[in-house]
Image 1 (cartoon, rainbow, N blue to C red):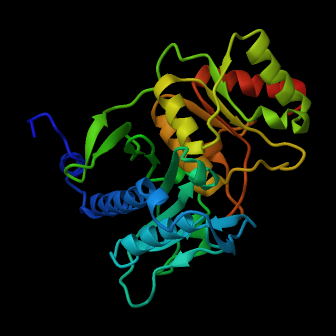
Image 2 (image 1 turned 135 degrees about the horizontal axis):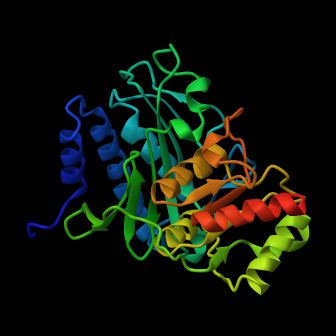
Length: 331
């Protein structure tokens, strides 16, 4: 290993030293999340070889069929964090309610909200999938947290990030001072700093990402926006259909990601707490913008654990354009 190689452990320790008041708890929490990512990544990479593909026969709180690998990822993250003494409670896209730390373990001051395996419908076709996580500080008086600890706006996040399980496994996160990407080197089992201080490029790629199969269900404003991007704006279209993968590409190249509301999903489809808010923090820390189409996404006050939201994320100028055209065109 040469002297320029920086592991995630070394990076976190170096960051901690810049803050003399730090207790080391936050560093330990990110270590635990990174460990969970390694375990999930290992199973994702060999999923085609073992009996971990396909539906488990249950439905999650959203009425979606739970994939076996979803369940595995959910359990891995929970078990990586439940006993550490760092976390008061958790919330997962796969669970109906918030999850207090069991009484047999000590509780801490952090709240972890996560989507254990985003894009799981792509598992069987070997398209990139990911894990999304959000970290808040506990604000309630309860030792093991309360629902209000999870229902905080994205602007209060202490940290957020995602893990992309693709041709390589990458962990990308922000703690409010820039965005940093780490790539897993399987030969040594370590995440290595590969993308320090990630910034969305200027000028950005003129690319939009949206599922145009739903065009007829969109509002007039959304239809006008996409028509403008294609016909007058000179934009190209790139859509993977895996939220983490689409945002990762836009983070590296620039562009505009959209998952608008439509006739079937008037409040949007993606979840505010598990998907939208964490990646909004990452995008904004990288110089971009995240919006519901009418307001900053990080300012949305959650009212329920599994709340949905329309999403417009990417290069700042493109999100501004989307907001302006949606306002003109009736949403």
